[in-house]
Image 1 (cartoon, rainbow, N blue to C red):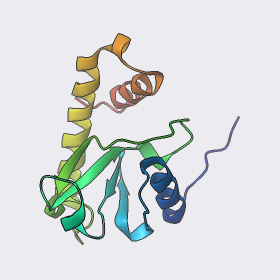
Image 2 (image 1 turned 180 degrees about the vertical axis):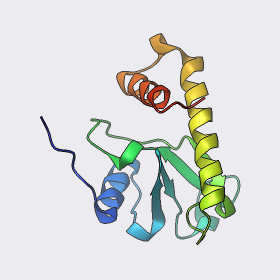
Image 3 (image 1 turned 90 degrees about the horizontal axis):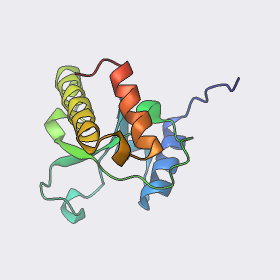
Length: 132
């Protein structure tokens, strides 16, 4: 039986940076629920359509032992709805709920036959967590 490794925020920033190709510092990421939130230092230079949008990556418990060598942003939230704002638990909880529901629907729409093993594992996790 393998022991679950607890990652520090520094480990997570390094792993995330390796998978995205970005230089990432610990202050640029937050992990909540199944999601990793990424805020680049300079949003103006970042290739996003809404300059105040925080990228969201599905990364349950920020465990990077899945064998996946790259990560792709699934969705985004506005800064005001992200964990980068102090004392923002209510808005973050709503963002997490919306992200989980949307991602589960996306996976279900793809169908199990159209998913990779990691996609099936993601779908099974969301079902196990009771995401509607």
